Length: 414
Image 1 (cartoon, rainbow, N blue to C red):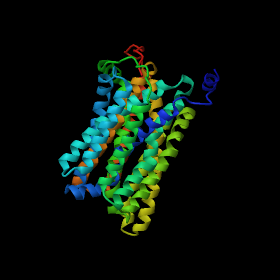
Image 2 (cartoon, rainbow, N blue to C red):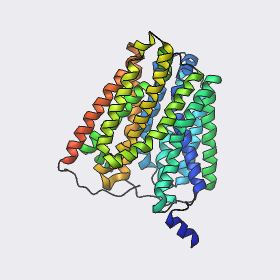
Image 3 (cartoon, helix red, strand yellow):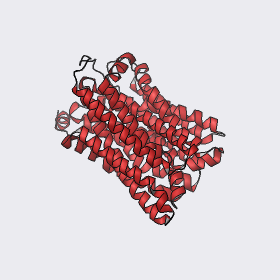
Image 4 (tube, rainbow, N blue to C red):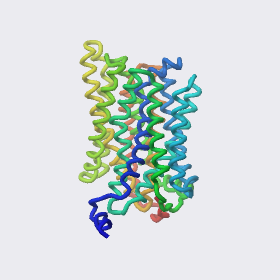
């Protein structure tokens, strides 16, 4: 009775240790997602491929995740959560171990596919499991705890992996990710209790919601936003080396700045969306992102004079870019849920796929641009894509204001 009272009052959270294990898995996925950015030059040299070609490891990971996440959500909906989550982490360990041992580019490319499928298997069910483990009144805290693994990965995991790569080998970076994922797999297999399964939602139902004009335009806005940021950030290592004196261990400082700014920017975005509205927050944030990307595009002019000035300005621009970029996701999700509140879980899943599609598109466009131009052009491409995103947001807002041609009710799902 006392325990139940504490839960109702929100003073305690059940299954905290299990939630922390789920967060460890999310940390591994988040680190693996972005850590390749910091060791791109080493992989390029080791595999004897161009920087643009090495960058497609990031593009492929994101593309496979974006495509497989909704399909796997339907295919695995009836399986016990423990089996899904431990299998996902086991496959994730295998993918990263194979990548660490890869003798050639083709092998590491295949390893990234395995890792991406495993990540797509893990994140959605992990969040749904967190929601199902706790009472409704502490569900937000549980989701924040597990989702915090992704944010902490950005702040600490990626810089740590970059540092390991700079001091030793990029292969040890993937070994680190494998070890963290193995810890999560064992812990989840031992500690995760039975969790009620949510109602299944077919792929056709998911696609039907995505086809709503306002929703589709909102998803395209998210894809364009992320593509604009990551067409540059995917290649931040080569850009820093070309335009500033920042290389090797120094790049770790850039990733630390990016990560800690992300931790600050994410809650700011949520608060601004609540106070000023999601649309205003999105547009304002996109303008700041575009400004930061344009500033990075000007680095070549400054480099001709003083490289250390350009290094300081790059660091400042990265902080502004990270703050504003990570402030956008809460506002974006807030807006998307508002477009189809009865289908909030499905819209959230679609928005996640749009994010990873943006990562893939950004990496591909950045690599294509590098094949015909220099790293200095990446900032201008990124800024342009932010203005494209603003156009999609405006168009989505107009369609949302129009009478909806689809029924509002959809099957409930988690």
